Amino acid sequence: MSYDAIKQELLTKLKQENCFWSYNTDSINDISDEILIEKTLLHLDIEDINRLFIIYPFKKIKKVWLEYLIPREEYLYTLNRFFAWYYFKAKKPDTYIKSMATRHFNKMLS
Image (cartoon, rainbow, N blue to C red):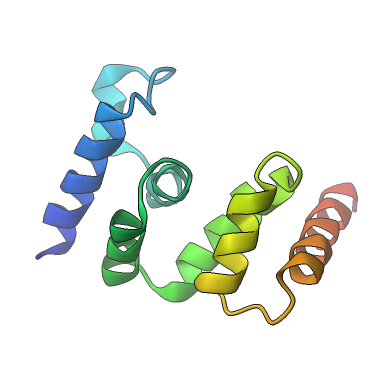
């Protein structure tokens, strides 16, 4: 399956989940890769998340996770813990999440 076909499939599923309720409907097909990755991580299932790794580099997906999901550590605690363990191979997910969240907030403050 091609990059465009997978991206379209993910967009279609995200639209069905009503993930773009706050977006102008004309702009949904032009969303950034970062937003597509974030919404997929938040709203779709493992098979769809696995498709992200087919069309995007591991580093890009991890960067989006660190920048968009980790800062919401309390709200997304269980999900982040799963991602840290399953996809990003953190040996101690809780410690890793806490340190990455702290790093993110310190970066914002500087």
